[in-house]
Length: 171
View 1: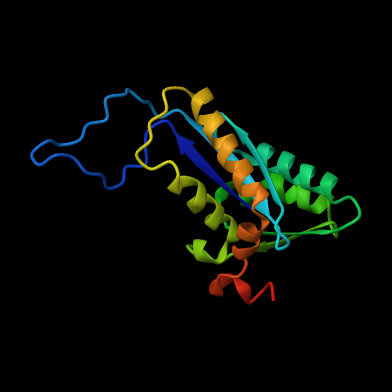
View 2: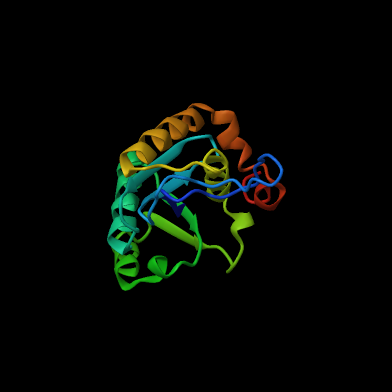
């Protein structure tokens, strides 16, 4: 499980232009963004939610509750990073309330290579390089389209768990 932001400002990547003509992005874009939270399962399921503000503890708890409803008869093993919102009192209280139902594993600090959801973010953001969106609505439409493409590609989602740094705990 992890969170990520998608901004109106583009992820600037290499591009080309005629010699002597520096490429310029003509659109005005602010720092407005959409925040996504996602969970990927080893059998290729993708659960994702979004909002137009950064996730806080309450948003994370809402997503965990959603996962608990989706897996009513199963306990959850949640693997995530050590972000500040994951260590809040509200999250600790939620986990105490769900004791035995939600099991938590925190990844070592600065180790995104161990989180399969980071591969989802990379896959999505690859499609957004050098793209400017003039509204959150436009951004949300394209994000929704790309997410649905990935959601249908269970082979791709399963492959996130086959990366050598991750495969040791899923095999």
